[in-house]
Structure formats: C-alpha cells, structure tokens
Length: 305
Ligand code: HEM
Ligand code: HEM
Image 1 (cartoon, rainbow, N blue to C red):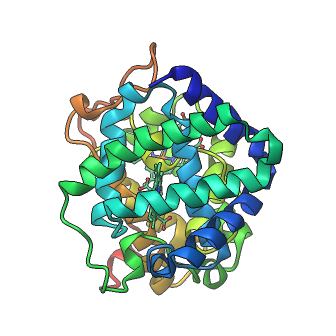
Image 2 (image 1 turned 180 degrees about the vertical axis):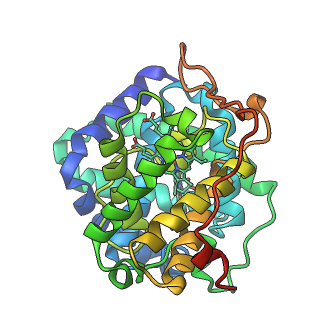
Image 3 (image 1 turned 135 degrees about the vertical axis):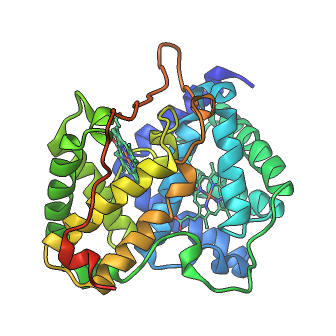
C-alpha cells in the first residue's frame, strides 16, 4: 500500500514514453502465446491492441491516490466484466505477461525494488477490479460482437482519414463552446488543443493508430457531473458536425455508435457520484440555464426518417 511504489510505477510508465508500442507488442506476444484463448478478448489489429495496452498503463499511472479513485476503479472492473468479458482469472496471466514485457524493455533497470512496486500496484488495482467483476453479470464471450467495446476498426478509412476527423472536431467544439449549457464545462479551456486531443483519441477508436496520450474518458470526466440529457444534447451537436462535413448517414450512425460506447463510463445521476482525484479539485456541475432549448438537427437530417 505504499504511495512510494505507486510513484515508482507512474515514473516508470512516463519513462517508457515513445517505446510503449514496442513494450505492448512484447506483452501481447507473451500473453497470447501462453493463453491463446485470450485473443478473443484482446481482439483487433495492432493499433487496437496497442491502444488497449496503453489504456491499462494510463490507469495504473493514475493510482497515486488510489483510495480517492476507488469508486472509479470499481466501475472500471464492472466494465471489464460486463462489456469486455473479462474474468477474475485473466488478471494473473495479464500480470505475468506485463512483467515479462517490462523486464525485456528495462533489462537491468528492472530492479528488485521496481519489480516489487509493479507487483504491488498491479495487485492493488486488480483486486479492486476483480471484486467488482465477481459481482457483475458477465458479457457473453460467445457473442462475437465488436460493439461491446464501442470501437469500430474500419471506420477511419470510410470517413476519409484523420484530417476529416479533425475538421469535424473543429466544427464540433466551435458549436459546443457556444452552446448555453454544455459550453459551461469548457470555460477557460483551449478549443484547438481539445479538438486535437479529441481527434487523436477518436482516430484510435475509429481504427487508426493510437497517438492519444491522455487518460481514458472515464478518468478525464470523473469529477464532472455529466447527465444523460447532456450526453444527448452533445450527440446532436456531434451529428450535425459530421453531417456538415458531408459524410453519409451510414457513417454518422457508425460514428455515433462508437461514441455511445464511452457513455457508460461518464454518465452520472448526481453530484455525489463525482470522483475527486486530488485535494483542491471540485466537482464540475453545470446548471441548466433558464429557458434552455436543447440543440436540434438541421431539417434535412431530422426529416431523413
Ligand atoms: C490492473 C489491470 C487492468 C487495468 C488497470 C485495466 C485498465 C483498462 C482501461 C482503463 C481500459 C479502457 C476502457 C475503460 O475505461 O473502460 C481497458 C480496456 C480494456 N481492457 Fe483492461 N485493464 C486491466 C486488466 C485487464 C485484463 C486482465 C483484461 C483481459 C484479459 C483486460 C482487457 C481489456 C479489454 C478487452 C478492454 C477493451 C476496451 C478496448 O477495446 O479498448 N484488461 N482496460
Ligand atoms: C456531455 C458530455 C461531455 C462533456 C460535458 C465533456 C467535457 C469535457 C471537458 C470539459 C474536457 C476538458 C477536460 C480538461 O481539459 O480538463 C473534456 C476532454 C475530453 N473529452 Fe469530454 N466531455 C463529454 C463527453 C465526452 C465523450 C462521450 C467522450 C468520448 C468519446 C469524451 C472524450 C474526451 C477526451 C478524449 C478529452 C480530452 C482529454 C485530454 O485532455 O487528454 N468526452 N471533455
């Protein structure tokens, strides 16, 4: 339970830096060689696999004050059980492959002290996740539905590549920063930076290479009270931005499906569900403006049905 060990692990992950995809490849080589059945859970192309590995390390890097984010790790465990078909017994082989990949990358730098830190931190987080998994209803592993995770491996190509995604996000954030209710969340934020980060994130979710280096959505938004109604209002703005770029209805629907795949990690019913990562952070709650009218689709889109 030492904070020092959590810091050791966080700095080790920082130091891996741009070598992360190489470590990821080693991790999967060991994991899937020893446990071929896990390729059903860790499915997808190399880019998708690297993204999953990156997400795992991003979460482990965040546990400096694990006690404060316990609820969020619990929810992460629930998502693993319910949506990704992960079982408690999958953690041991995952840890073994991770340790082997780290050893391969760090060589003599993987000292006994550092190994012990990884061992402890992985187990701390895994134990919380496993406790949540044991209480959830599992996804049906026989159902080979890629939509369980929300990702869509071929969509980026169909959209026309990263430049198109960036243009859509510029439109999206232009509109959202001006939106009377949702705009409140973004006061003081840098629009161009957000459009870039959102693009890097979505490029990976749409089947491209993962260059996103931020936290996963569930972590980014854990102190924000984001309601179902706000997610629906945001969805209209997103739909409009995609349509205005001239993409087909079919692509709009596929993109929206990917986007919705992240909602369950974000949505909250009340301020009490906000999780504060550190001292001095406060819940972000946007009060609905009086006389608020939610965003609407342009008539051509609304009449399509
Ligand atoms: C301490 C251990 C682990 C941590 C911290 C961790 C963390 C994460 C995080 C943060 C995500 C991003 C999605 C989300 O927030 O819901 C994720 C996704 C995922 N994880 Fe884990 N994970 C761990 C162990 C495992 C294990 C043991 C498995 C299976 C053997 C697994 C399989 C997956 C899969 C399949 C996804 C799917 C999402 C996608 O398609 O990107 N994870 N994990
Ligand atoms: C109504 C719903 C949402 C609101 C109000 C919202 C709000 C925000 C805010 C305020 C930030 C800036 C955080 C900061 O700089 O501290 C942010 C960042 C971000 N959001 Fe959301 N968000 C919503 C939904 C989503 C969804 C559904 C996704 C995933 C598809 C998402 C993905 C991201 C990403 C990737 C970032 C960038 C994080 C980074 O800085 O690395 N958001 N969001």
